Image 1 (cartoon, rainbow over the protein chains, first blue to last red):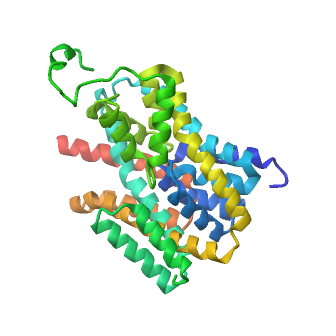
Image 2: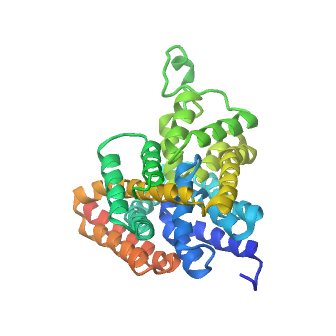
Image 3: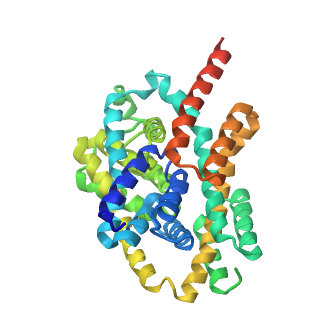
Length: 176
Length: 201
């Protein structure tokens, strides 16, 4: 980090990552973890799990976990640089492609590629869950909380925000 | 998309009625509002605002636009704001929707980052965040299983092997994303293409 400008490291890292982020923000979490924790040592494992929790709890697109990573690296300029690097290049790409394919239903390739990407993006999201669980679920109580939330969210249509707040309360009370 | 809007105008036909294209400020404000309402994902709120509330697109147009954004890389909802805004008002509309979606939550997130940097070591906050993290992982597991259900029902072995392969490579072996996808995407496209041709034949 000392050998190069951290802002440029953020911009190059996240703009490249976004171009490979098929399946949305959740699918990019393992790669964010690998880069931020293992490669660049921008954050600890625990800080990354905290950042994920904050991003889930706040309004807006979940991809904004990159804002928190950017801030940890280089303060407010880092936060803005990471956010724009993650969001702007692919948005411009989407703009040009949408102009190119005014009617995407005419070709069968978009549908075929989309179908081909489905199992890959599910695999990526499952990997996110595993990596995050390894850093947060360090006790039996924590593991139980994760499992309970997963079951409740699966069988009911309760607003996810309540489940996050319930988790926060249990943590506040020192139970997990 | 609906050239026969003259006869339809008599009836309160929600699915085809179009509102006039919004101004840039209206686009910015609409996306800012859906973004701030969107705890744990913006898509539901975006669909409600664009299709039901403002009637800027029909349900079919929205699905088509979202499918395009889903198959492109990057955060889907961010792509959607740019594509949607530009379809209504050109590139300026795209920028207005993009900025509306991202600016307010980015400011909130930056404030939270400052608070975390200052008080992140306070024990009460640490414990609360740990609890929230556990719940957030639980929610993620639910999404994964919801998305997996149709694949499990079809019992498509090749597809399940591809999914398991990506999970193992990224989650267990911690290989770099680019390398894994450079192999997995062409492989999956080829397999899907061959399977569809077999079904068609």
